[in-house]
Image (cartoon, rainbow over all chains, first blue to last red; front, side, top):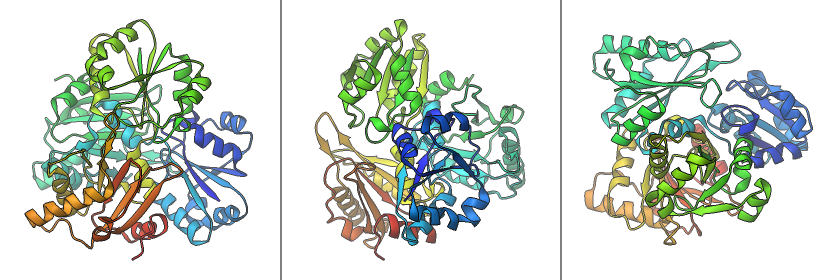
Length: 253
Length: 253
């Protein structure tokens, strides 16, 4: 059997009791070190679960996935995935291939950055439209288009900023906002207003977490430090959401 | 201090190690028994954390919230919340009131049904637009409007079906779909097509979990048993999503 276990947003303390039991019972444990950066302390984790943890990189999960599927035919293999499993297409593809090869799969959910960031800010989940990712070296105007679509309906946009762990590159809040202004200047569709309130989030849930809400024209100068970064681009804010941002995201207006 | 701890989608095994430590260290622990039904085994949990757990109902969280805030001025009070904290407005309001009274708050995220259901089905999170809740005894056409908006953009809709724990009433998959057909008949805006693929989910993550994808015209006859129920109403399905639904949601077409 192949067991996908979500490991949550920070370190090994985000793993659920159910996930921990599965790791203890597994014959082999892989840690996905490709789709997100992991902050798990391997030594601690190995001690708690009483076995070695093997790191799985892009080549292991996307090219040589047959090896993992083959192992799962004979023993219980656990794949520990940062965040919630299956938010990345990589895991969905691996699970499909496993099932098609006759390997049973099991899903142990984890804490996702998706709902954690919404809850942390006190925003309303019903007010979020489609989310979007800004990849490293991006040239597409998709993030602008998604914000336009959501704003037209008064909806908020959750913008994930890529952190390419293997290359050590990442998109920061500042440069993503600057890029949106550049597209606005070219297309002039009145999507990005310098006075829009936007929220920058860095290292959600970590001790060094930094969260700030301010106008877009100010956000493009702000430094958020180490990755990962996220942006929330609100549509229309409910008064309770605005109050929450004042208390939990240092909004000054 | 007032500490909000997400308890996850099923029972006490979904609590994270971080959440468990906070519960062990807290002076007083409440379990939210209002915003969702909890499947936590109280006896087990009390044994693990070494203290009594007090149930908090609607009146405790929405009317007499001052009592909890007052307690949190003098000691560490933990509120264990089904799912992820703050998905319900009740918790956001309580947190705002606590901070305004000078009580520090802390958030320990939990596993949310929101991302768990998307991952479980193998669908792509970027393809989800706004979500919506169908309340018990609903007359509003909001769910229809949200599906219309999302479908126009090719996006999926996550439809939460209310389970009123205190009154013991809930909305099931079948009746929610029937209601959508009634609105379609009246408004004729070609939003709900009898041949649309929809997905019914009951008791996500539980041993008795039931998941099925089929055409809407068939779904309105299906029984899903005990609550909670959820519907996913897809917009346009990517071929990999369709394949995932065949494998993980028993889609026949």
